[in-house]
Length: 441
Image (cartoon, rainbow, N blue to C red):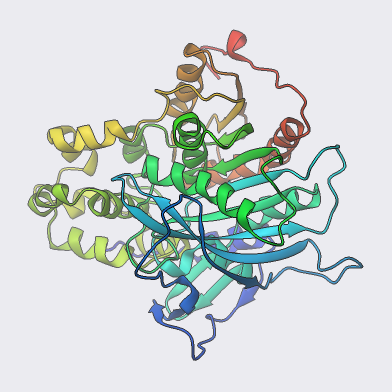
């Protein structure tokens, strides 16, 4: 059964550090069509029956009110936002609708040339449609119904906007769009959603970005995995996009190792999101899951499929997957015992294709949630392939909780990450560290 402990102080501290605002559940309107855990999802997020042929084609768009916005001489600060739905292709080759948001900054780009564009891949938001990052721009902190959702990526988005960089945010496959379950940490789904968000932003009528705009990718945690995968996939999937640089923070490059790291921690609920996503991507794995999951495990997966990260922290903090299986094995043990699962996770491994553009990999040396060693190995793998890699070990003292050990490097390194990416967008060369990549942090 779910392990429920009282940790509201942790969730509140995270929200406070991000300067989030408290809002009620999203208001219901005549056009709303879906409700998840007491939160109404606008009809915009319901995909049409038919999709365009071209990846990145716009399906629909509408103005998106930013919760944290001030009036300015030339328009609202930090910019004007548009909600998006665009077409992408999932890991099985099937067409899929993806939602997100584009923000046109009020600030000017001061480094010469056309205004650049950054595609931001959010960190872990959850699996319920109400957790989508585009909704987080409108409602930075949602505490209503049975949902606790924090739009913590807003901080990085606003930092980029203040530099005059346009930002497009993807909600990922199945998060926001109400027709399927979010395929959490699926390598190709994440990569395609990020790259097609760039194409969609270029197609917006009122956007200042064009095909000539420099393009960068930014992501941490789940987002770091998505941008890393996108940097690898770009030459083959999106040759029409030239990347100036990619920031990949704390990337879950080896999901087998990450599964071991997350089990029993503050974010143990992410195990359920991963399994749910695997089953969405490959229904052939369902008999294996049915064979190994007990009633409590199946109930947890169903419960987590509607939750945001705040909900999971409160409800599944320190849960152990051994309570979810028929024989008391951990999910890592189950993966090790099942060739089909090992093969599926092996296909999710990032680091086997060389990015064609500069990448910056940063990881907290004490991160035990998304283990530091496997993230550092991604940098080493890319270096061995001849990629232009800047590796940054982020030194932050151990903070006691796995979630804090993972979250603190995000804030500590964020300014430097934005600065590095802005430098690439301005045309300055990177200073790769492959020749000096240390054997230890």
